[in-house]
Length: 499
Image (tube, rainbow, N blue to C red):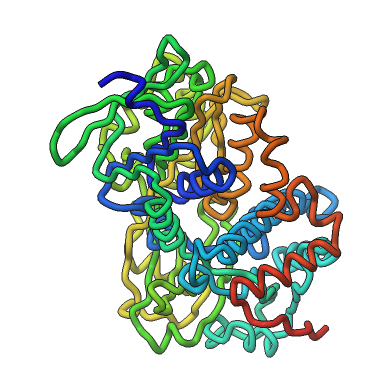
């Protein structure tokens, strides 16, 4: 087979929410481009995007306390929360566009509105939450947020959490009704179904074994059909590596300078899932607490109502676990084989600096079910062990890289690595991840196709009206977008907030 016959414009590696989002965006912007997708599993959205492998929180910084930090003077820095909220607004606009275009026929198949709450206990934490609320409620992005320390009010907001709680304990919460529960697995599958109607070449049970640059500047990808055992090579002008934890190995195989001094540290997640319908019916929110002192951001405890396959569920977690695998379906050799001469010092530096994280993971792995139940009882005081089962969630690979902060710095966000010429990009990292997929993929498009952005700008603005603008500085546009997306996505009408 000659290279010319095998040429395609774009190869997407991995059939998760990131590849789905990038593919749909490119099909909107360049409908004539040929796109091929390779996924080693038998269908789309089975790893990190799967609905049982993540919390399903539409991360808009409405309840996640780790996105806001307390400064030495007691004031609260909300800049990261603002940034994440702006990015989630981009996703909401694009999803609304897909519904209007009938790419997504029924938005209720993947998104529902659900209150987002933050809950804290203890005088210091109550003071922090009060200050956080005061800072956030002044910003139009967080309009509608309420705060209370009144036990009666809190019992109305979260009856399951307040029931059987000892009187007199300092406790406070914020609530905002415009939060969301998002089934990213369902959305991924919907978008991949649309791909097949749009003549995208989708190949399941195909693993990418290698990729290299050809003399004529294309990327040659070696792919193995796992059912037949046959391999083929295909060339493309642009490659996106969206293989979750598996992206690191493929990025290293690319050999681009930007792949050097980058490593990954795998962390598995576990959730308690409620099996008692009576308990499930008593809760209707996502409630995030505050991580224990010294615990990493990934450990923020939360009690989540979920809607999966039109069925209401209740989950609590996450509890961390450790396995050397970079994917749930990965190999126990993933971690050791990711250590290369180009990143060994980076990895060793991280190991030396992150002893607290190592200790935390060991402690988490050693927890018994009853010890996990005790953590759950911080949220639900009378939780019964027989009402809860343990499930293994998705595998997260936290990025380790050299930064201005020093060698081997552990990152707790989503990272895009792009070649200097824009011919290849890789998505690494974890939360807020899927919630900000549209913004992240627009970043990939801007970096990798800079010569097309002027041509594509009007189409991007048609899909995302706020493109290029900060919504917090444009409250009228923000209000219009909120009303439009709520109507399109089938959310209930906003009720006035009682003060």
